[in-house]
Amino acid sequence: WGTVIPHLDLFERRFGRQSREVVADAGYGNEENYEYMDGNDIEGYVKYPMFHTELKRGYAGDPFVPEHLHYNEEGDYFVCPMGQHMECVGETHRTSELGYISTAKKYQAQNCGRCPLRGMCFKGKGNRTIEVNVKSRLYRNQARERLTSERGLYHRSMRPIEPEAVFGQIKYDCGFKRFRYRGKRLVEAEFATLAIAHNIRKMISMRDASSR
Image 1 (cartoon, rainbow, N blue to C red):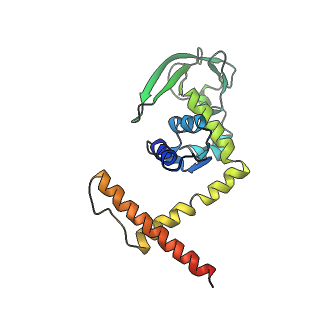
Image 2 (cartoon, one colour):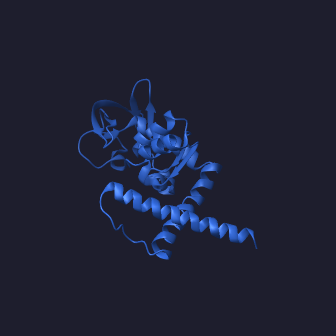
Image 3 (spheres, rainbow, N blue to C red):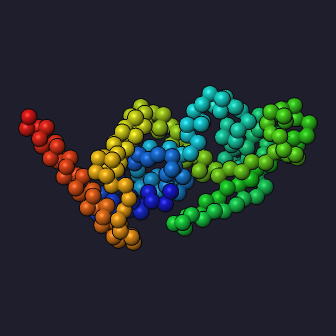
């Protein structure tokens, strides 16, 4: 998860401009990356780990999952399917490898004992408690809208084709299965050489195709 921001920063320093769109798979869909892209006017077509699960009919029609509970931003509480307010009762903080601090809050219902929906809502004892990162939830909703748009469907169809083909050519056509050097600088130099060679082959292939 921690490679997106350094990569985009390096891209901007090297080329003097920033990407207008970024496409990546679910391994990079987190609050830290979404906030970075939002703050730098980048349209992120980046999946999050639960993206495909949320599109399934069973999940989409389940009113009890936290993602489907109504959130009142002004009062900072969720509303369960029976209309009961789930108030904030605490929070936890996590720090990423890049130093980003995210906050997840715990929300708890006040009286689940006699609720007729309890058996379908949750199986634990006491009142139901959920843990939600509200900021991350908002970013995921934004990401879902983009990924399911016409532009998002295009990027989703192209993402596995464009990079995976290159990986296949490098690993199987060229036989590069592992790095031969150790240390970050040497590995970067080795991969840079490999990338240059790959691009030269593509340029020659394109030139030959256009001259036919």
